[in-house]
Image (cartoon, rainbow, N blue to C red):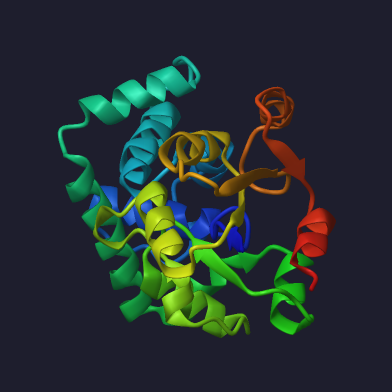
Length: 249
């Protein structure tokens, strides 16, 4: 069975996440990247790989805003970002709810603007939408309604039951266990664009007699240096054509 992450594997959502995170931080309703402070989107995209789950979008956006206000400050690294997340005055569930609420406000106020802030990764998306392929499920920390709305808009037919999402703070390991209870497959293939997520799943999902094959997507948000690290850790690196080949029947 094949499992695909959503943001960073199927969808380039950086503009939407940046706008939603900015709205969550500012309690506002910006609907387009042109209304963001100059340089904010570029800074957010450059640091997007530090964000592993929705509750971290607000601390990341806060750091990006601070960085623009103090451009001579230190650059962000993984350890510093983890400390900022731990020291946030808001607990993770509140931060996650704020991001999802901001996304919902954007969707309700300007659905076309929300959709335009996202872009499917090609050629994988078109292959899934129109090609002859094996079945797959989406394993993501994004909220389910956003995933389904984007799939419908961009022409990917997927059943809601096949989207294992981050609503209620459900992480990928917990969803992986739910997937296994449903399918009981002897092997799972999972493609994600962030190395920490793959490590976390490798440690958290250990089932006797079940093989878990992990792949780091080259086209997502991970820095180039992560490909070599992944290979050293026994995690394969895959390009879009390799992903398509895995999905062929």
